[in-house]
Length: 273
Image (tube, rainbow, N blue to C red):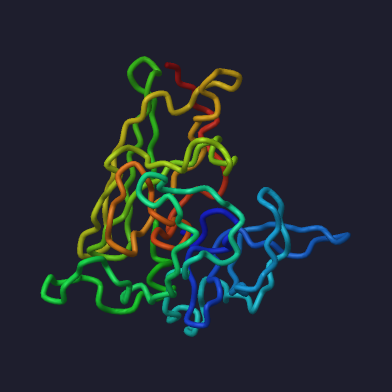
C-alpha cells in the first residue's frame, strides 16, 4: 500500500492542511549533507524543496505518521486530491498529449476524495462515494500480482487480485517502463493493457487481467527502453478512464497510486518480439 507514485510530488494524496500524506519512500537528511531514502510514513510540507528531475532533496517533514497508524488522528485523517498545477513537481511529462496538451495551465483546488466534482454529474445520477475516505481506510488495500510469459515468450500475462480498496469505485492499472524515467522522451506513462479498468465491489475487492506483447525485452535490444519494471494500481478520483493515457494530469491530480511494488521488478523475465 502506498500514497506515492514518483518521489515528486512526494505523494498523490494530501490532507486538509494541504500537506502531503506520504506512505512510501521518504527523503530525509543523510550523513555529510546527503539524502537517505527509505520506506516510511510522514506528513510532508507542500513547501518542500524541489530538485531537478533525477535528484533528491530531504523532504520538509511536518511530522511522522504513527507506526501502523496506531494514532487515531492518523487513521481518521480525511484524504484529498492535489491541486492543479501540481505542487512539488519536477516530472514535466504530459500524460495525455492528445486530450490535454497543456495540463500545466489548468488551475483547480484540492478536493476531499468524496467531494471531487465528477464532470457532468447530476445528484440524481447516484454517486456512490458520498462519505470521506480516511487514511485508515486507504491503508487496508492489499493485492497479489501473478506474471507469466506466454506465446513462446512473445508476450506476458498479468493477473491481479485486490482487496481493501475503496468500494464501488473505478480503478485502473498502470505500467512503469524504463522509458518513463526520461520525462523529456517521446512517450508518456501508459496503461497496463487497454482498457485498463476494473470496478471494485461493495467490499472493495476487484480483479484485473491483461496481456502485453513483449513487455520484458532484453537489455541491449532496440525495444529495451519499453521494458516494464513496475505495476501501479490507481484510484480514479474523477471516476473516469482515459483510453491510452493513465489520466489527464496524473500524480495526484486525477489519479492516485494506492498499490505498487516498492522497487523495480521483473528482472527474471525476458520476452522477445
